[in-house]
Length: 128
Image (cartoon, rainbow, N blue to C red; front, side, top):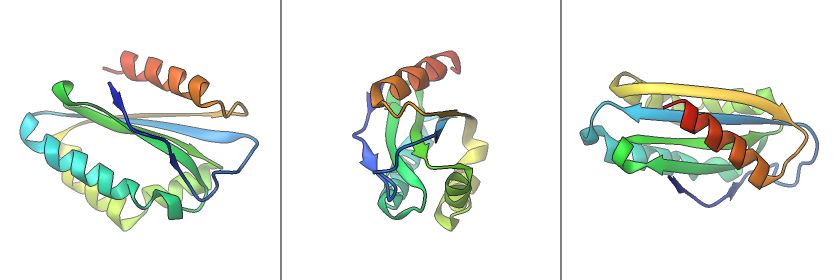
């Protein structure tokens, strides 16, 4: 698995209970993969301006046609704002029928990057 660098959000200095969101898109074929990667990367450039965004990592397993993110939010409201962004809605419309999307969330007061990533990686491994 390739894990991108931590992308801090507008609420990067927030401390307290946070919401973790893990997403995984497994594409049905390789033809859609480059476009999906590009779309995810371009969307991540919006991250520093998103209200309630603490930070995120993008990840990919190119040979398995899988990609997604592990994101940290101040709360559900911030995450819902992102999900409703026109750019996110457009990406979901374009790629949702071209593969399988899975997601999970949990709350934690432990904003330790290693702890978050270990739990996310375990879920991603089990969600294959």
